[in-house]
Amino acid sequence: MKKALLPITLVFLLSIFNYSCSSDDDDSAVSSVIQTPTPEPEETTTQYTLTVSAGDGGSVSSEGGTYDSGTQITINANPDNKHQFVSWSNGSTNPSLSITITENISITANFRLNGMIFTRNSFNIINPNQRKIDLLMTLNSNPGIFVYQKNNFKYLIVPGVSDGEQTIRETSPRGKTFVFYNDNNGWSDYSIENDEASTWVIRNFDSNSDFFILGDANEIGDDWRNWKGDIIKGTPNEGSISWERINSIEQMGFYHDVSVGNMNSDDIPDILGVGFKFFLGRDTGGYDFIGEDEDSNYENPFIDYRFNRSFAFDLFDLDGDGIDEIISADYRESYGTQESNRISIHKFNVEEEKFKEVFTSNSPTELFNDDRHASSIQVYDFNNDGNSDVSVARENSSGESFEIWINNGDLTFTPIFSKKFECNQFNMLEFEVFDANSDGNLDIILRPETCGGQPTESFLYSSYSENGRGLKLNDCIWLNDGTGNFNVYSDKELISPLWTSYLFPYLENGVLHFVGFEFESYEYDDENNSLKIDVIDFGVDIR
Image (cartoon, rainbow, N blue to C red):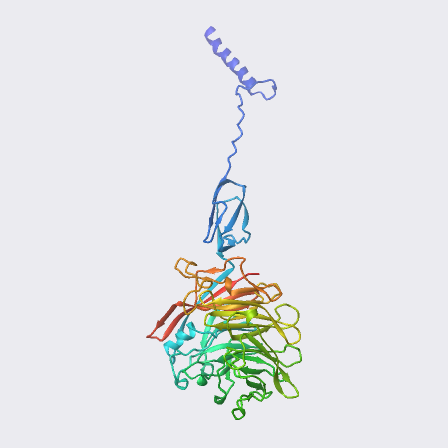
């Protein structure tokens, strides 16, 4: 009996224990398992790397590092004294850039040479039916290059040049004229113009809104009486040019300067050439020529003047009567009653139907202490008083200069400013007039060149680049203070590692440009009679 009772008791006790542990109705029951709280996970910070670098011409305030996500960093781009900040590689144009770090970032500060934007267009010029020497002279030794703008086109006119070694004009070949075209998308095309545009050498030019004229001033041979060329008219139209020789063979002359204007109140453009050779436009087309009369001691029936060498003049209506005056200056003082450094004004006398001198002035002590030979004249209002003033470019064996004569309002003029350059200091081929900094005042922009192919102190410097060559453009830019007095641009250095022997200015959308040829890239292929040439354009924003 006892052996059977023990198992029964154990079963009963186990049943009671199991019931008590599984009962959901007993709130006082205590679990046999102790619950341990789960610890909060430790916060981990994500970090990212910022890499900052500087392009040529400047530095940055920080090169970056590793930062927590969400960190704000400000970095600054710092150009050196020859460069200016352009943009960050992310497109921002603010030199002080704030960045929130949310990812790995690499950014670069970009700089450029002060105020200058360079474009380069390469051309392989095929040169049929022209001597190699004339082609090289045309592109590398040419005082008559200029930019003409009409509508949406710009034309870089490169008049033909003969090699200058000939002694007889009649047998000396003329150089063919080149034209480079720009439709606001860079200098993208060129042409070799026809025989009507071929010349020996162009010194000066003039233009109106419809056409331009070129003055051929060849100096072939020892006898200056045979220095005769032509006046060439070019009429651009949407990327092409029609050409016309204004004069006949009998009317050829030493056209060192030419001017277009209105000399007889008929509103038809007239043309004046050196030697007071008049070409009066006809409403039916063509021109009526009035020149010296060999039978009357070489007097001109259209103008009273002393025998002179007026190689520089301009046509402009100074007094608003509808007929242009002739503003002229002599090349030298070595002829009879002429005096140095003068200008003269001739006004058309309606009763006599002739231009008569109404003003002449010589001011050697006010302007220069040596004789200066006038090479070009331009008329603009330089002191903003409503009267047109006169600017003159001059030269002699020591160097070049320019000067300003202020209009007194009665067809008399007073010189107020002059600047002279020695050849080794700065060399120029006259100048252009633009409002280069958009301040409402007209500025003088010089057309620089080397001095006999050699560097000058303020145009070509050997220290401007690592290869020993470069350009400084500051002395090309003379800013008007509003009174007709000028100061060279000095806010920042305008320096380029590229260089040419000539530069020619023009204004586009308020930005001053200089264009020239990089002559070291000249690579002539004798077999194919072709030439590689680079057209370099310097955009200089000084506004």
